[in-house]
Length: 389
Image 1 (tube, one colour):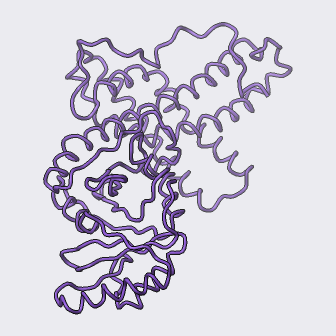
Image 2: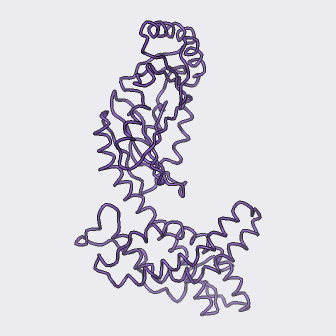
Image 3: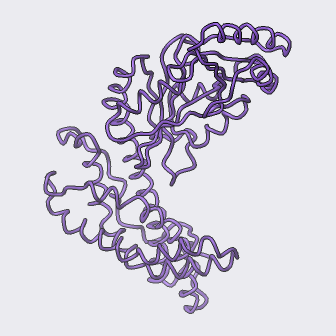
């Protein structure tokens, strides 16, 4: 992160609050003391302000602030931009739908690091949080699980950066391959809102669709590998390394072990597949035969809902490792028919979901990506598996 004064006061103008000051730096408390001693009052959001209606009084407070800042070793800078909260409100009012804007202040430089984990970005916004001082940001929410982050563009006298947080189901966002790129916004709220609505939000929706799809397909891949191994062991009477089973009575324990493993992954399917299924329109692409498969998949999701609800209910009361293992095995066995349906019909799902990307269907004239669910028949000697204990 680039160096910043240990005691810093940033001034900007606000149409509602007058002259606004933000204390910032490793010794921001000294900046706060300077503001309070100069007569600035704290406003909603944590900044300090002096009204501009009484110009002589404001001028006197500004002069006092210069002296108090010098006494406390604080550096004062004046921002060429309007108060960030004002711009955030203006932007939210112009976006499609209903959005709220909430200012957040990060007095100490280290606090902005808390934004890096939930941020889902592959562009300049992430780099700014990693390398530049960011004393303030605005969080924009639409009440439909979309949360955006707005900051002033570091190193520039105008403009802003806007990117997205990951949805609450995801917490591993570092270098996530589907992450959308943050966008540079102009200082005009109308132009900025147009850029967000026509460029960033569609890109975000496509990225989230792809991330959900990848999550579901990876979960099915994990389950399939173990499922095929278990079936091969049951059919051949041998472990995956060719060693004969000592006792066929070991099969039920292997099934419970598989069910435990499968449920951990199938929860991702239950979490992310419904919204993907809701976008699939099998009558529109040239695969009308997929309609029956999609209906089976929807039914499988519905049939496992009670099991998923029980899983969620136990999450707050079940702490034993063995208890969780037994519970997951029970859930996996209960959901096994649904799991098998998803394994059987995954190719149709993937094909339809890839064609249902928000913002327009995949160009069918272009080469189709290789379906991850398309594969040759399993070999006679399956690979090592968690089923081999």
